[in-house]
Image 1 (cartoon, rainbow, N blue to C red):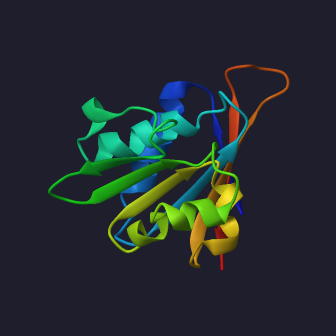
Image 2 (cartoon, rainbow, N blue to C red; image 1 turned 45 degrees about the horizontal axis):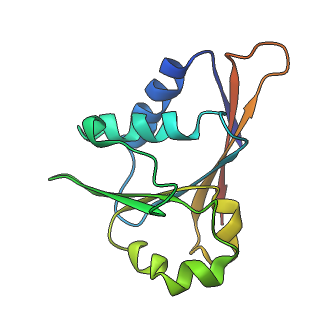
Length: 141
C-alpha cells in the first residue's frame, strides 16, 4: 500500500492526472471513502488527463457515465444506491470491465465480483485539517 497526502482539491486532481498516465483498457479503480472526501475530484483528474474534463458529472442517479475519447473509454460508476453486486450484474455493469477504464465510487459494495487485479483507493479526511485528504492506494490481487 502507498499513501498520498492531498492538501487541496487541486492536489487530488493533479495526483489523479499523474495516476492516469499508466491506465489501460481493463483497469478497474475502486474509490471508497465518506461523502466529500475527494472521490469525484479524483475522477475529474482522470478525465482531465484524457481531455474529457468538460463532460464530468456525478452518475449518482444514472449509476454509470460513459466518457468516450479517441484515446480511451472511461466508465464512471457510482454504485452507492445499489443493494449488492447482484443489482450490478442485473444492469450489465460487468460488461464494462473489458471495454475501458472503470472508476467505481462506493465500489466496496461490489468488490466481491470485481475481476482481479484491481486498484482500491481509500479516501479519508484529516482530523486536524479539513483540506487534507489521505489517499491509500492498494493493488488487490
